[in-house]
Length: 313
Image (tube, rainbow, N blue to C red; front, side, top):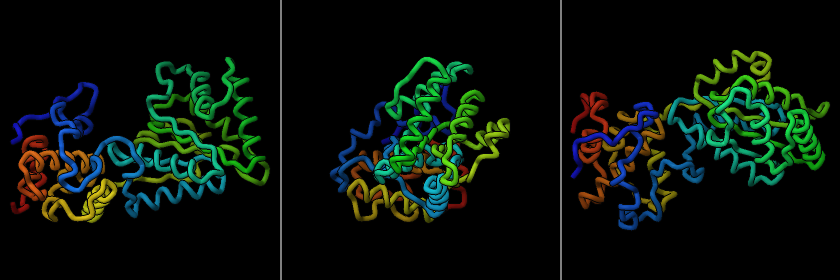
């Protein structure tokens, strides 16, 4: 049985982020997934593009970005709220272009960005160079020269160079200026030598508005909206299928409640799904129904319980 207490919250996390954390004693490894026909945890919050469910909205946004990459249009922007699937989208694009074979692609996540110093222009360029396995000289001009030579040679070899940057709203103006300069590298009549995808929260639009010369180069803005009720059920079913289970595990009423509590935010859907699966295992339940989901909500999301008002138990 669950205790009526919240998981501990790190002071560095917002409530929205912290509420997706599992308590230490509820690690996914404690569940016998085989009992449910699962080969692995279906609702892990780690970034594995194999588990990315593409809603119609996500398909449309990623299709626009992919088109701009293929047409060498330079700069694309992906925006989404916390938990909307931004990092997963970046990982999905990274894997897609790695697998195509005629692209050289790098994916910079937040932990790889030099964000400790606003003057960190050279460390930023060196980080980009490292992702492409290039030499890293100790001056900005020399590093830009190395990157330009790499892009030119890649173009001659019919390779498209793609740089994906997650949490781009945290970049400094000096970083964005370097991106603008790299986007100046192009082949006359054949498009940009570098394709850049900036991924971030809606704050990224404000950041870019402060850099008008870069903002004017954005070829497309893609938005990752919250999922619908139908997509919430499809995401749950898709993740269960990837993890090994073909049959339904959640009742329609359980999915209804998960949608209402999560507001269709993928990360929250997965956090609720994982907690419900753990509770089902604890109770020796074969299906996850509405009463079981309500137990999870009472224990971990009591501040969101008002969203279920009017829903019959």
